[in-house]
Image 1: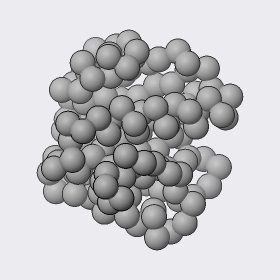
Image 2 (image 1 turned 180 degrees about the horizontal axis):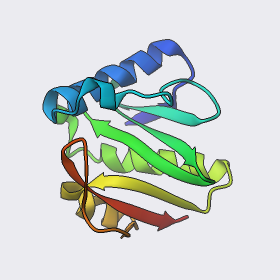
Image 3 (image 1 turned 90 degrees about the vertical axis):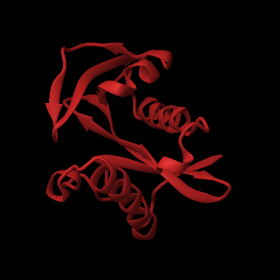
Image 4 (image 1 turned 45 degrees about the vertical axis):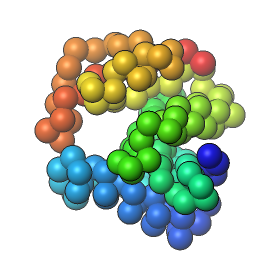
Length: 143
């Protein structure tokens, strides 16, 4: 398992392909809702890829919202889940947040992943809300 920050358009396209397969094809998120103005390489957000046997299989990004680090677009291709890659993605994004001075991170987690995030130290901070037709909760962690 390895990971890296995305620094070029080629790797960003790989991340988009992973997100399309997971969020659009698998979960039914509308294409127009998945990709946004933060899907670029700039100071507003940082994207990563995670690898399994040297193949890119997961991605995520951290974005700064009102002075807080928000973890977003965290996903792993279905056939590579259960290898601990989700934890790798979260740890790398949290490190990026720390490097940029964040003392707290937040995320909108799908409700089925609440237990996973709790094991990583996140606390549920909202009731259930819908995002792209999928139930989510706000979760926060002190770094």
